[in-house]
Length: 334
Image (cartoon, rainbow, N blue to C red):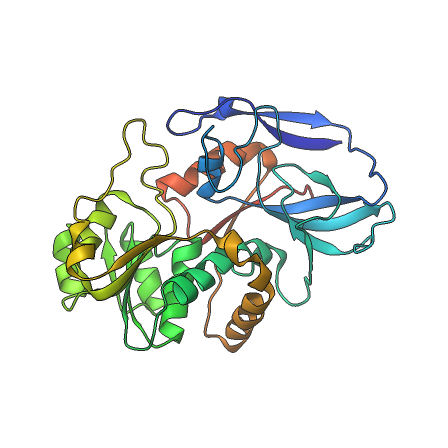
């Protein structure tokens, strides 16, 4: 049998438990050219909140009655003449929040559990890692000596952005929530400084940590923090809009930047980025990041919780900040 989390209603504000329904159905038999994947881990990402809205976006919204969309990693347990995958292969793709996924293999790829733990393939070596890699290198166009500011710095993407910028010779300041997270990004990840948005005035803290301004701002949160960062832009600065988690559950109007004229004065740019645009180069990025991990230059942190029935409260951790690094849900039952 297959436990599945079915999307039942579009939430207003923070999703509640009745947004989904946990259902149990028989595991379908694979058709010709399909495989059955026993899912081990599910990726929980802030973008999932946007996918629940019935609005135009870079990807179609989840439809009512569908399995909740999510990245995943697991093991092929049955095949029906699939051209690429065999029983016993470990694979990662878009399996959704369920224990078993049946797929024709499109947008799935093999992973090697001997090289890295499975959760890493939906974290540092998966979509969050690709987002960080291409976001800061290709969109941010960083160079040695740049001053880089990262919001959501203790999260799945932000923590990697900061580390990659350090590898490339930048000075990196992170914005995170709480003393423990600020200590983590400085002491363990090697950031040059930290700002605790929960206990500090952002404008004052930016003057302290970025007295010379910033060359690149990598934004994961939006809202007032984005607005404050715009006041510190240097000439030809780049602002990368990766996410706006502070606004995803906003019941009223989204808070946009008031200080946007700083872009004009400083000949700066502000650009959104979607990781899917770089899909053809994922392999190259994963290889380089794997080399950094092996050499100890890049640290990967997965925050793992268990039980598909615990998805709603685990998902909420994305927005309360009650997690560190990449949030993962283990759905295979031991």
